[in-house]
Image 1 (cartoon, rainbow, N blue to C red):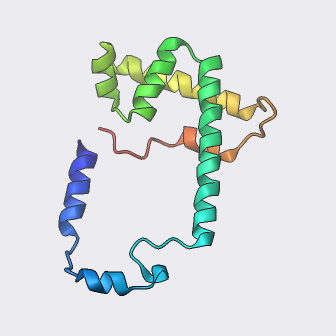
Image 2 (image 1 turned 90 degrees about the horizontal axis):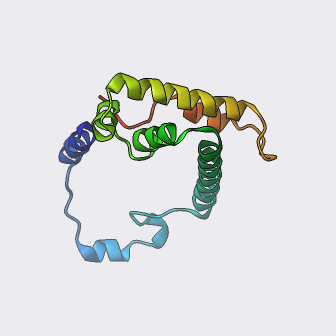
Amino acid sequence: MRRTRRLQRTREWRPEVQVAPEILAALPPERGLWHVSAAERVCEEAAAAEQARLLRWVRMMMARRLTRSERRLVELYYFEALTVRQVARRRRIHHSTVSRGLRRAVGKLRAAALETADGLPVREGVLRAMTHENPLERR
């Protein structure tokens, strides 16, 4: 909810500028509002491919190394962006149990990242992703 409120405040601070549609239509494509150069597109596609590859690796290691309960905690906390207390309410367990389960699960995934798995080189991105909090605000 805090993230939603923060986005709403950010949107309220943005100035609105009225521009006639003819002016926007007359702009060349490279000066358009949402222009993305070919180089930027290539970089974005490469980053998206790397992120998808890392996500597949994490999902594979979750299936192999985590218990069903640990997997569910990780999915709710990291993939559905719920807070520890929200996960606890949904799972009907104490929030400290959720914290311990997440710490144990991330430790197992971190250990897997330190090994080479299925010929994939150990990637700093995997370790970095597992050592930092979810970028969404949690509390």
